[in-house]
Image: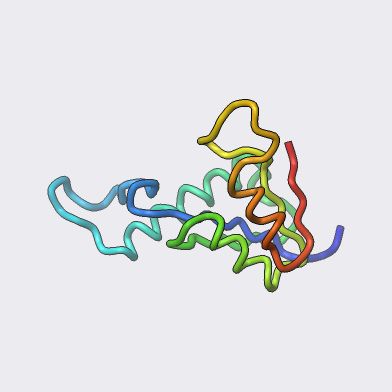
Length: 115
């Protein structure tokens, strides 16, 4: 509705990134290979959710950083940051996950937290 691109940001670390498929076992891939594998995974997820032609520009942004830091930094220039209310960790009864809570309190622009 706003005519802005969708930026699909995924913060990652070596422990959360998928292993690059083109690197043999026993070899430690370079960081750029991990970043490409993360980008490919996000691209696939976006395509599964929005289809092949979503009607908007989609930018895939893999960021090697903690999710809370990466999202706060992205909020500095974003029109709107949208996050889920809970992540993969945490306690089942929490109203907000730690990342969304951090973003709500430290984000530099509009933040929408969705269930």
